[in-house]
Image (cartoon, rainbow, N blue to C red):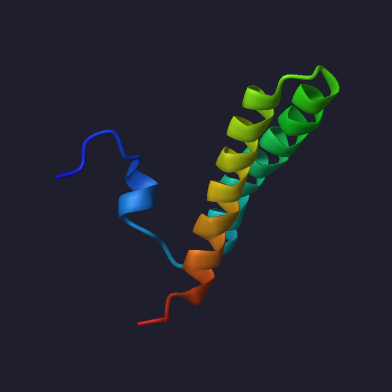
Length: 69
């Protein structure tokens, strides 16, 4: 068992409107946070926020690639 991994990473879902609605605020918030961190010249914060946003997008892409059962 992996400790410290969020539930949604271990159990991917199908791409539904609810899945998109759950991930969209995370992506939007972190994209804005990246822009603000770049503006304030905080590269570590910018990179971290960019990785979180990329993870949210990757979860959506993985869900869309999953075949329907």
